[in-house]
Length: 348
Image (cartoon, rainbow, N blue to C red; front, top):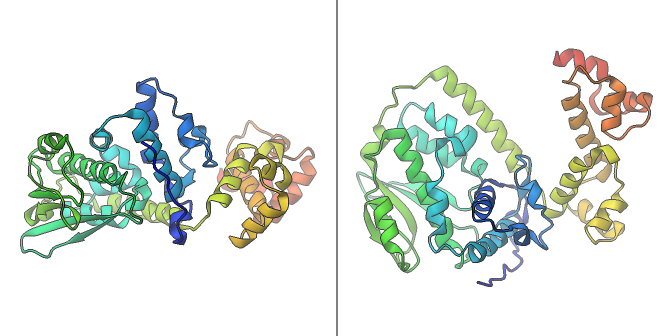
């Protein structure tokens, strides 16, 4: 299958804000089938080794292109169902834990809607209760890419089903599944999994459930734990929501990987096949100063290393690109307002 993802005009579609959870699942399937997934990332300014890094963020354009290539390479017609069925509450990370500590299934669903972007979801999810006694989970694609819509819907609804059954029990099943595309040749796989009425060629993509499920109470609810996990989710969402272009994200990843080498902008531009002037101009268009970005990454790495009391201050400085410990101390004080020794005492 060859599909070209055209450049998109909406800023959020080119912003590198999507965690790589789904891409990790696809790469894992490739490894299990002894397939090389590296070609999926060619020309996207993404290194396959970066996908397992929790700090990596990709744009909707990049993620869509990887999915298109994965669908072609893996050649599994019902790939979305396969990926979705392999997920559980644990795969949702902090959000999964928050849902598990909610007071009711309805509250868990609300949390899922609120913090869906922390899971790397590529569809926007909302709930509607237009018909009495029913709640519909509506999935909308930010941009229409028909070639991957079935995969995205299958993955979203199958993973949601797995999580729901883990939360309330194996008896959970939707009332019906509505999908905007024609019934695929493997529609029987939908019937076997969802065990509900299927409606294809509909105006929307939705999983409709009995509203009574929303009142299901969780016996493990703990208000203190719930508040603690919710605060972590808020912080995670705030981090993900920070807008960042593909160019800026690429520069940041390179700096993190080569922080010890202290690479200049010219070296990064060369790797990206751009002139230094062009790269600087594109960063400026994002409101990003290379020097400030570089300093932030070095400060963050230094703070991580200061947790290791087996490292001297000079060794910490060396690992973030300083040959002279005194220069590192001055730079660290400028970045944080504290000396490295003061920061280490606060960490302790």
